[in-house]
Image (cartoon, rainbow over all chains, first blue to last red; front, side, top):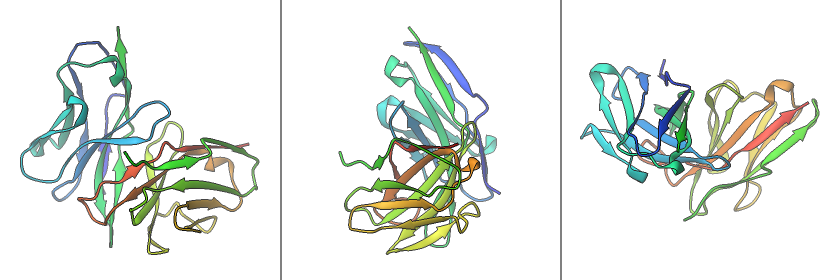
Length: 115
Length: 115
């Protein structure tokens, strides 16, 4: 069965420092992978997605993620975080259904930014 | 930018009562979804809806749950007789098409508290 693991419940980084959020997935075929962000009081916003092709995916807000099949990972990175990046980040994999797909979610990683 | 909206943001109800959670999907979207997140747990798929009928549902979505698109704009989730374990954040989502490439856009969620 498909599953997603985000090993870090929360991560604290200093403003301006680099960031990497870990995501590991379990899926038998080629996965379709997503990163969403949820800021307080906001909905889940898509940061980026991987379907196929280039394994380094660029997203919004300066984020990128790299798909590594050998490690079953899809880690999210940002070279320099801003205070506005403080939020909860969710990794997800798409599980195909008969006529659509559902998202299988990780537990989320809360990002805390130190001034 | 168009967005999915949900009302209310927080609903408190007593066990056994019926609740209706409301969502206004993005106006030209055709596919609608409900997910929920119990506090401290992962986001879980509940149901998808297309062409005025349920297209997929999870095992969580039992006879106590129903969905409806009563008019051209609203998409509702009804829980007939709430239980304590229904306390969760409920997210509505919509997409323009079906299948992997179509992004699911999420609302900010309704926090349901059953006492």
